Length: 427
Image 1 (tube, one colour):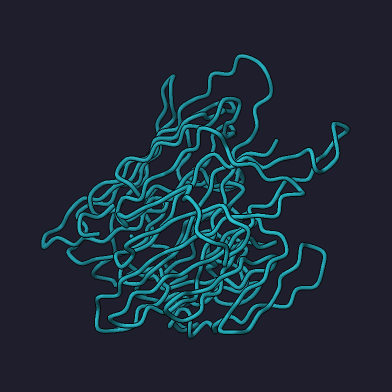
Image 2: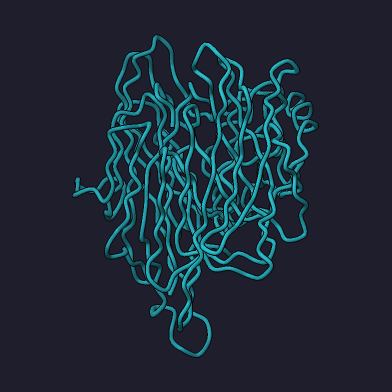
């Protein structure tokens, strides 16, 4: 949040400038979609990435399927945090660069209206790792720390940066250990970010990891779809899970926090992000594990002085039934909340449930006209997908590039994004 301020698909096709490539479900052969090179996407060098990676000591958990951003400099490489990455572009040694991963697994259909074509990227069979490092300038290294606490009602984790220099933009990470001596189920999440924060990512760390409470500069990452708890982009973000749905935290759970911030003031300021994890009241019955999906377009161009609409189509997928209780078509994926994400040139974003990317307009499930405070849309009746469902979600981002230069996808404040994330459970 800045005052002047930022699926597991089935077989789909990616449209890139009149070229079409299709990705197939796991276990079949994929024809890869045309992808920009590391130099084109990131505009950074592998040498710079190596210098940056040496700066980080934050050990993050291995990511689950579906992470869009990778953080290693080469395919099959390993980030400094020990998390496997898949085809990541290089990071900048001085500032966090655009880190588009060319992941294995199904992609998501993408197109652009009024500009260059966009390649959609969806879930991968091996996702991106947590943050690798992007080295800070020695005289601008941000200083901060992470803390954790708990009481009878909730557990709390925080990352706080002290006296951030004017004009400094950075991603910083910590890994804190929650003080719960037994496993905990969480039914509500409340995240808060201060002035100057762009977003806060909250993820569960690996149980064999180690806490790192000193904030380290790190490369952008969205965490893992199987472990991520929330992404906060409003000053106050509340996620209330449906009855019978919760997140599980193990005893002494490690929590990974990444804070993206930029100080737009002319004086040093403190910038922070925190999350409160409210304990679930478990009386009886079986709890269903909540998950989240993160996806969108990672290759588009916004021409100078023009309006451009970026569209992509995503299939949330459906779970496969297990056990003796029924056939696969009886298992359903329930999406209960969703939101969009752009940077400052984004003027309108919508998410619709439609048959394909070119379907006629329908009533949006989610709509945002405020790029700095896009709403988290929580659905009273969750959306359902099963093995027979053919439709999906169309994400549309309208941009007005009022600058005198092209703007591309990237992770920096002055780059652009067109993403969405969903909260769901399988039953």
